[in-house]
Image 1 (cartoon, rainbow, N blue to C red):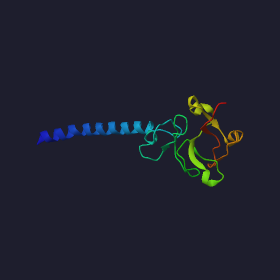
Image 2 (spheres, rainbow, N blue to C red):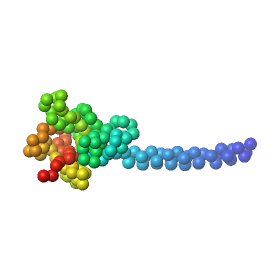
Image 3 (cartoon, rainbow, N blue to C red):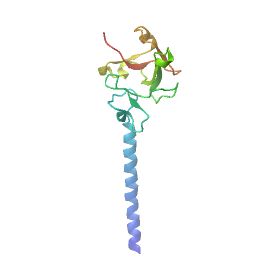
Length: 142
């Protein structure tokens, strides 16, 4: 019977070590999760949970959440309504927040802009979040 006790106690560190390894793998996987504004080619590139989609109409694809509500986008993103009038033509999506174009995918043509910048290009947008006014969007360089 003493031998079984030794096996039982020897198994505990193995179980503990296995639990630690699984926890580290889970943390690393969460840290590598795609963010709003990341490049993509399909929705599975943006989320295995199906809560984000890939807008393949954007250069290099753009991970986003469509039909967002004000102040409800994931961290580091902002809810923006493009073409707000008439409402039936509006596109509402989470866009990556930014302070400068360095926060955006510049190699794919994305720049950090605000509504005033886009109005100068005859694009009508409405930022639906209360505290953020700048976001990454693909801008044609002319």
